Amino acid sequence: MLGDALEQVRQWRAEADLGFRGLDNDVRDPVIVTGFTATRAQKLTPGQKDANRVLATGRAPAEHGFAHLKNWRTLTKLRTDPARATHFLCALLVLTNLEVNR
Image (cartoon, rainbow, N blue to C red):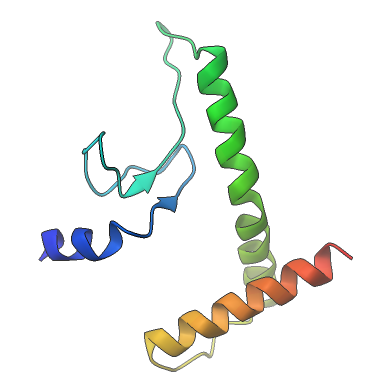
């Protein structure tokens, strides 16, 4: 069951923050793209820091859009099928980002 879901999502290449633990551990073909994490013993290289910065830049508009939708409680009473909800949510995120950035 999880394997089927991974195959369906593999084409999406979702981006997540550093706190997210991915669905699989396939380094060559990840489903969830997260940044690099530093440990006490191993600090991040400048290239890893740049990669984290690029991921954060690409994720920021969606994160801000979801934050606004949560604050406005827009989706609390949404009762529809997932395909329609996905299109609705995408439209709301675009409109939210347009409103916030004007």
